Length: 601
Ligand code: F6R
Image (cartoon, rainbow, N blue to C red):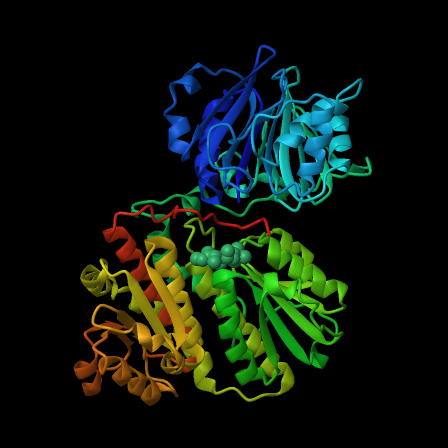
């Protein structure tokens, strides 16, 4: 949510800042701005809209300088326009700030500053920061002024500050990620390491309540108590190709097609001779009485599948909660509970807070996280990295299938510890899974043909049962978030209890009806829709004469073990959503109102 990039060195800052904004645009794209120091002057250019607006702005070509900061915004306070875009500057244009997060007490700080004569220009919460820094910048370093300012601030922030006379960037973090990149006589700052990989692989992740003073010669980090912190330089395991679209039209399509590899990477080194190897450093894993799986959006859907897997295989009760509900409902968590935070980004504010709450209540915590070194990964007692690779498309695809794969591994691991018997065939199917994911992708052309028939529909229903009910939810979410078509997912049997009223000849219903223990039941549900003249798209993995009567269109999935079916079944639905949005000519990687990595509550 919002992207920050900074550069200080000997090269022109603008190309690096604009390139960085392009890499970070998936974090927010309603306005963008840059600020570069030149001859004791701050040159600021801001625009409403996507980064391309700023890139094409003629004023950018006039900017010179080797130190600057930039920001791409996802609006919280104040509509997306040029004034509310970051960087924000003070009245004398000597200090500029970019901010990611929310300043919760900005009303009272603003009142206080206004009484002292500070003039506000924007409607944002972030603007208080620049005036506060100005207020404290008296006979002290810029870093000390930022620290003083932050002592008054409640809420979350990842921020960067520059002053017109200083070739340095001050960065500070509480709750919103920031990573510093080290070069030769140059340094970088970004909300996400993917923006840095072109320039350097040596990075330092700033921790919560730390402030960094960054110039082209050295980096100094202190905690908010003013104590020096030693620099922990890490090596990025990321290649430039991983963050480029290549020949694909969209990142989402690339990421859908990467799934044979991403699923394989989730499995690599963790499955051998029907045994599961996970390095979970948890005390007393044998005495776990209950698991609570928490996540948001797509990650919550994988948690729902995880419940089926763990309860069925390991015979341990599982609860699933939206992270945002869990953290505020005073959950009854006890010592032998294991709380699993599921998150692609590892930065989702609600999931992070839920994990923290669980720890406070004495539970063990595991993170199922994709982004290495992210906040949730660091916060949890132990974890399973997804290794899906960078996911840049805003709609989550490969992270979802890797989450479900990791939950499968966790279920099998717990089953083994508990002495629960698992059919040998499941392990064989699991080894074969990347191949089946590849097979299911070969259905893409047919999925596109079906999408061509339906892309003008205004509403969709997705129905599934059992372990494939969350796949119906996920199919509906994918469609609505990138195509803006209203779609709802339900357990198929629930249909009769209200939603069936929506069915008529214009309402397409997507049935997930691959052969499993609920197959015959779902065929009955299909008949109920057909009787009301609803259009039926059936996702199947076997030819069944009954379906040729009932279904208007058929999409093929693969035959696999029922426990693995959500992984292969979700892929044609990702493609279906993708093709519909593409046929509608929409900006698939940057759907309206959304942003990847929701770092605010
Ligand atoms: C949907 C989507 C979101 C995320 C949600 C949680 O396609 O991407 O619903 O799943 O914002 O994000 P993470 O997994 O990063 O915690």
